[in-house]
Image 1 (cartoon, rainbow, N blue to C red):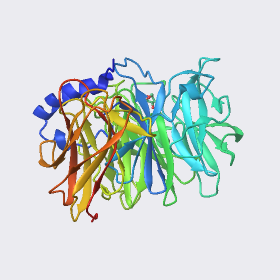
Image 2 (image 1 turned 60 degrees about the vertical axis):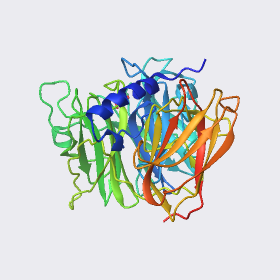
Image 3 (image 1 turned 120 degrees about the horizontal axis):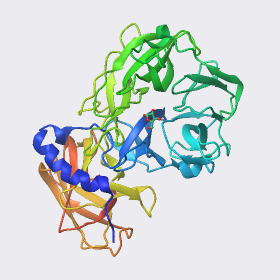
Image 4 (image 1 turned 90 degrees about the vertical axis):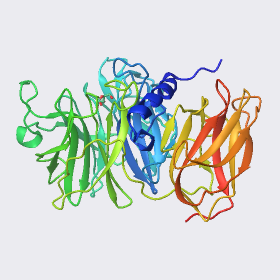
Length: 458
Ligand code: FUB
């Protein structure tokens, strides 16, 4: 019996309510992922794409119950491709639990993923390193033991222009080591960064923690200035930041990046520049069933002030504007999604992932699709262990103009794939595409990929 993961079922029911009370809900692109709960965003720009590494809050969590990390990628900041889970607690034989907030960096032709987990042998939080030769993994344990362990969490990694790499982490303190060029060892000791109120702001009512620094540091350099953006105060957290003339300080507190918002008592920053714009990633509890232990990653575009300070950024349901368009005349993965309702993803037998657990009325939105001169045909790779159903190709909204309908018959299995095609009309210019799945009761079919033909993008 194929049973739908909880969040998908929840979304299908809750989206009906959400759409009824929030007129803009159908157009929202935040949170970025609707298929599972995600937390602790760690974006990496590599080869013209943003790779967004996240944690995964389990459905119905009542603590930070996190067993794996997840990965999504995009080249336009709105359509995100689901790459599944390239690393989990099982990657680290010595880890017991707590797949918490980490960061990935590219160096030496490899990708290094620094993560905090609980060390089974000591019961303390330690920092492990995953390594892969591709940003999508699979990642393996680089060391077979922690890189460093002092009971504290949330590593952020940064390579200075000199080539010297630094790993910072900490809650309640803030630490760093100088990583060697192999990125899996360090020289010198573990150094504590003094948490002064000048450096990290003043917290009132907590003598044990007199500064605002709480956790989740994100360190980077821009125009010669070093930034440490971090989760501040607790609880609920806001996002604050400090700057310094060098990688080890002295730090000066600069104020608020994102106020306390969004029904999660934690937040976590990730900051990048991509295709000429700056983006701030964070998490909140905005999905149905969301909260402090069922969080979701979101993104906003922002512009640095002329003096390099960061403006105050607020959470939106609209998210960042699209940076580019999507070409419908090349194969697109069905798990490339701007927004979805009732949809889950899973590993596909033909490689990558497929969308599944599709029921009558579920849909996927793909934003800013450049149909250009106009498509004449749509093809999709599908599989169904039941009676199948239909893919409605709609434009502008889930109930927008019907450009075509593809019928999907049973293929005899959820991973027994065939390609279906149907004629298309009216798909010209750049429009939002909605693939709406219809049929009888129960699960209808899976979709691995799709493609339009007949036109040229533009
Ligand atoms: O996700 C688990 C923990 O919650 C992270 O390590 C912290 O930064 C906070 O977001």
